Amino acid sequence: MLKSIFAILLGFLLIYILVGIWSAAYNAILIGAGMNISEAMQDLSTTSIIVDAMGALLAAFCGGWVTANVAGKNAFAHAAILAGILFMLGIVSAILQPNPQMVWYGWLLPFLGVVGVLLGGKSATRTRS
Image 1 (cartoon, rainbow, N blue to C red):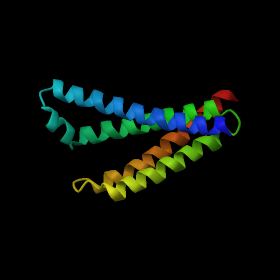
Image 2: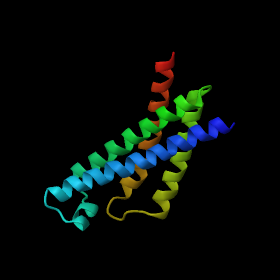
Image 3: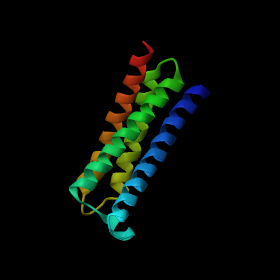
Protein backbone atom coordinates (compact mmCIF):
# COMPACT_ATOMS: atom_id res chain seq x y z
CA MET A 1 0.00 0.00 0.00
CA LEU A 2 2.74 2.47 0.95
CA LYS A 3 4.73 1.52 -2.14
CA SER A 4 1.69 2.28 -4.29
CA ILE A 5 1.19 5.69 -2.71
CA PHE A 6 4.90 6.43 -3.00
CA ALA A 7 4.95 5.43 -6.69
CA ILE A 8 2.04 7.74 -7.53
CA LEU A 9 3.40 10.65 -5.49
CA LEU A 10 6.85 10.23 -7.03
CA GLY A 11 5.38 10.29 -10.54
CA PHE A 12 3.36 13.40 -9.73
CA LEU A 13 6.36 15.15 -8.19
CA LEU A 14 8.49 14.30 -11.21
CA ILE A 15 5.88 15.80 -13.54
CA TYR A 16 5.77 18.96 -11.45
CA ILE A 17 9.56 19.31 -11.42
CA LEU A 18 10.00 18.57 -15.13
CA VAL A 19 7.32 21.06 -16.18
CA GLY A 20 9.03 23.72 -14.06
CA ILE A 21 12.45 22.97 -15.53
CA TRP A 22 11.05 22.91 -19.08
CA SER A 23 9.28 26.25 -18.60
CA ALA A 24 12.29 27.88 -16.97
CA ALA A 25 14.61 26.66 -19.73
CA TYR A 26 12.32 27.91 -22.49
CA ASN A 27 11.89 31.28 -20.79
CA ALA A 28 15.68 31.53 -20.47
CA ILE A 29 15.96 30.91 -24.21
CA LEU A 30 13.40 33.63 -24.91
CA ILE A 31 15.19 36.07 -22.60
CA GLY A 32 18.48 35.19 -24.29
CA ALA A 33 16.82 36.00 -27.62
CA GLY A 34 16.10 39.54 -26.44
CA MET A 35 12.74 39.36 -24.64
CA ASN A 36 12.43 40.81 -21.19
CA ILE A 37 11.12 38.54 -18.42
CA SER A 38 7.53 39.81 -18.52
CA GLU A 39 7.36 39.38 -22.30
CA ALA A 40 8.75 35.85 -22.03
CA MET A 41 6.17 34.91 -19.37
CA GLN A 42 3.31 36.28 -21.50
CA ASP A 43 4.46 34.89 -24.86
CA LEU A 44 1.44 33.28 -26.54
CA SER A 45 2.99 32.56 -29.91
CA THR A 46 2.28 29.30 -31.69
CA THR A 47 5.86 28.23 -31.04
CA SER A 48 5.50 28.82 -27.30
CA ILE A 49 2.24 26.89 -27.16
CA ILE A 50 3.75 23.94 -29.04
CA VAL A 51 6.91 23.95 -26.90
CA ASP A 52 4.83 24.12 -23.71
CA ALA A 53 2.54 21.30 -24.87
CA MET A 54 5.55 19.14 -25.78
CA GLY A 55 7.03 19.77 -22.35
CA ALA A 56 3.78 18.82 -20.64
CA LEU A 57 3.48 15.65 -22.68
CA LEU A 58 7.10 14.65 -22.08
CA ALA A 59 6.86 15.34 -18.34
CA ALA A 60 3.63 13.32 -18.12
CA PHE A 61 5.25 10.45 -20.01
CA CYS A 62 8.19 10.43 -17.58
CA GLY A 63 5.85 10.59 -14.58
CA GLY A 64 3.80 7.65 -15.85
CA TRP A 65 6.93 5.65 -16.61
CA VAL A 66 8.43 6.24 -13.16
CA THR A 67 5.14 5.50 -11.41
CA ALA A 68 4.74 2.19 -13.25
CA ASN A 69 8.33 1.14 -12.61
CA VAL A 70 8.30 2.00 -8.91
CA ALA A 71 4.87 0.42 -8.35
CA GLY A 72 5.97 -3.05 -9.44
CA LYS A 73 2.77 -5.09 -9.44
CA ASN A 74 -0.19 -3.68 -11.36
CA ALA A 75 2.15 -1.10 -12.85
CA PHE A 76 -0.24 0.22 -15.50
CA ALA A 77 -3.06 0.53 -12.95
CA HIS A 78 -0.85 2.84 -10.89
CA ALA A 79 -0.10 4.96 -13.95
CA ALA A 80 -3.84 5.10 -14.66
CA ILE A 81 -4.51 6.34 -11.13
CA LEU A 82 -1.86 9.04 -11.62
CA ALA A 83 -3.52 9.95 -14.93
CA GLY A 84 -6.88 10.27 -13.18
CA ILE A 85 -5.46 12.49 -10.46
CA LEU A 86 -3.67 14.64 -13.02
CA PHE A 87 -6.87 14.91 -15.07
CA MET A 88 -9.00 15.97 -12.10
CA LEU A 89 -6.45 18.58 -10.98
CA GLY A 90 -6.14 19.86 -14.55
CA ILE A 91 -9.90 20.29 -14.90
CA VAL A 92 -10.09 22.11 -11.57
CA SER A 93 -7.23 24.35 -12.70
CA ALA A 94 -8.95 25.08 -16.02
CA ILE A 95 -12.13 26.04 -14.19
CA LEU A 96 -10.55 28.13 -11.42
CA GLN A 97 -7.75 29.81 -13.37
CA PRO A 98 -8.98 30.33 -16.91
CA ASN A 99 -6.68 32.20 -19.27
CA PRO A 100 -9.02 34.58 -21.08
CA GLN A 101 -6.73 34.64 -24.12
CA MET A 102 -6.44 30.85 -24.44
CA VAL A 103 -9.30 29.10 -22.67
CA TRP A 104 -8.96 26.10 -25.00
CA TYR A 105 -5.36 25.52 -23.96
CA GLY A 106 -6.25 25.27 -20.28
CA TRP A 107 -8.72 22.53 -21.22
CA LEU A 108 -6.20 20.78 -23.49
CA LEU A 109 -3.52 20.31 -20.82
CA PRO A 110 -5.42 17.77 -18.67
CA PHE A 111 -5.94 15.59 -21.74
CA LEU A 112 -2.27 15.86 -22.73
CA GLY A 113 -1.36 14.83 -19.19
CA VAL A 114 -3.57 11.75 -19.33
CA VAL A 115 -2.19 10.67 -22.70
CA GLY A 116 1.41 11.21 -21.59
CA VAL A 117 1.03 9.35 -18.29
CA LEU A 118 -0.75 6.41 -19.89
CA LEU A 119 1.84 6.16 -22.67
CA GLY A 120 4.62 6.28 -20.07
CA GLY A 121 2.92 3.62 -17.96
CA LYS A 122 2.41 1.42 -21.02
CA SER A 123 6.04 1.91 -22.05
CA ALA A 124 7.22 0.84 -18.61
CA THR A 125 5.13 -2.32 -18.67
CA ARG A 126 6.42 -3.23 -22.15
CA THR A 127 10.06 -2.89 -21.16
CA ARG A 128 9.53 -5.27 -18.24
CA SER A 129 7.82 -7.99 -20.26
